[in-house]
Amino acid sequence: MSFYFAAEKTLGKLAKWLRLLGFDTSFESEISSDKFFEHLQPERILLTRTKWVRENYSSHRHIFIESNNPRDQLKQVIRELGICQNETRPFSRCLSCNVEITEVPKNAVYGKVPDYIWETNDVFQTCPTCKRNYWPGSHTKRSMQQIEELFK
Image (cartoon, rainbow, N blue to C red):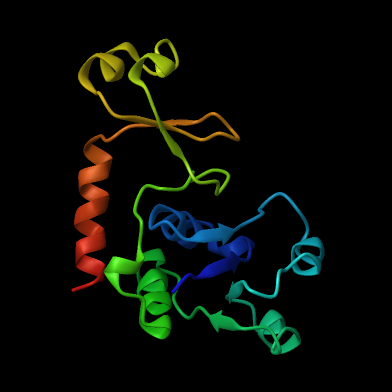
């Protein structure tokens, strides 16, 4: 099952973690709330912490996020939707712009990543939209451990 999310401004860390798990998550911190809700696509599950939004968009599928803690927020979304670990695709989306990232040859990122990173890694991915580069680093291991913990 695929899940598509729309996270309001107050849920930036939750949006980042959902993207890290591979879920298409709309998050627009730079636009007004009115515009964000105006363009809310019907297939997206609205993630909100605002009672006004919950009440005024009650016809839209939504989850009212209860905690201030991003980890607890993520656990709530996983629990309420019954998401299984095999439904995730960690590190498959750009954390900045939400586009699926693609693997690129090592030479394609030469001069675009720190020299040490280029010399010590063989696997690189790039966002086709914002051109941000990704590689497996110590953060990847830590994030994978946290993902394992989420689904225990």
